[in-house]
Image (cartoon, rainbow, N blue to C red):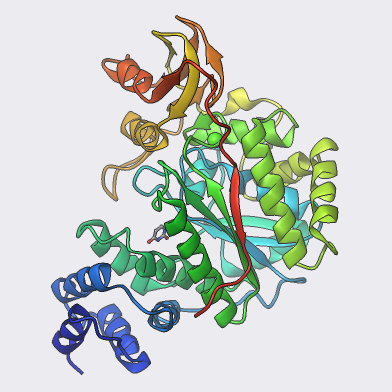
Length: 436
Ligand code: URA
Ligand code: CA
């Protein structure tokens, strides 16, 4: 087989066979196909798309490009949650301990910041002492002992995706549905979990901004999960404004503590309960969705989830005192209140722009080697639908330097209307099936 012929076939709108897709991925991972040929192939896929069968084959080939993690040493079925990426998406820090507090094991590998979106691993590293790398034996032992461990994705998980993602990032081929579906599901399948709850974001801050595209992505990923023999469901959820009120690493840890204490923002709390309830049902812990939701609500009220977060932090070398005293987390030298220059209802909050601003403040990396500032970020004082008067606070910017143009840029992220804007849904769809 020659890469040239496969690029030409896809460019002409043809459908690649299973063997052809396997060849492309294994030869690319082995360094036998050059980046420029693979980039041309990704661009051909971007324009011609892939059939469901091709997408499933691509996913499995990418999952098998490295090791499939062995979680058979964990007692009980392991359900993983995955978000397609959002702004202020603090859910893992909340859902993982909350679900684990019900006795359902969480053995999760997470990622770092990507583009304008933050990453769970960076957020955890803002906790003084927290170790995100454990040996496989330590990982399994901790999950069996306290039901939860969160670690960073190991090098052996889907190496094909690692190479492909870096290539797509610089060749304008990230936002292709089959490539996103294969990228995410290959890593999930390789992580070794027994089932998946996917949180597919839609709206201005999501990779899939249009609802129809997000639904299609969700259906494709659910179908691939099932094809791999893993029960999978997806919620298509709103990312038109940031989730909760905090964006930034240490700020989001604080926010997770607030939600688990029962004092969190409504949208973030509700999304965590909904995702967590789906996980309890897939794990066969609860007989039905309502029972699962009620169990989690009770764990929130008794602070069982908060205690589980404390245990998780202590077991991974972090300072558990941050739970009672969040001021032990890194704090920024400057806090600047951004006020409104007009009165009215908040109609929109540009999640993409706010996410990018937080990255520019230092919460993300400029290149692979750069270090990040855990303390910086933006705290929202309003959400879509809030009424504000002139000179009332919209947000607080946490920074390590005095600000220059940033307050103006933050102010521009808020859209106003004179009448209350229509209420926007938090959960758009639940996808339980799809065809491959
Ligand atoms: N997240 C991923 O892991 N891969 C993508 O392609 C997009 C979002
Ligand atoms: Ca948040």
